[in-house]
Image (cartoon, rainbow, N blue to C red; front, top):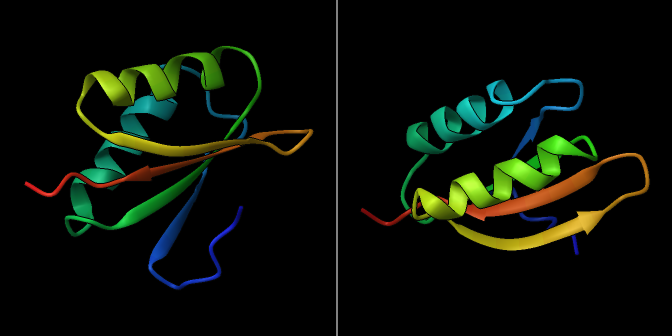
Length: 81
């Protein structure tokens, strides 16, 4: 389910190795306004296995994870604090 609303920011991290993809995702989230949504594109394997768990441990809310055949789409909300 892709939200067509402009308040969802896209971060394409396909081809970015772990843990750099997590670091870039976290930095982007920290730059965003509280309550904003970020859609992150991740490769299969280690990226999609590690990044959602790491974000959850940091207190972020993962809304959806979609398998788009060649990559995964992760939708995460910026914390409100």
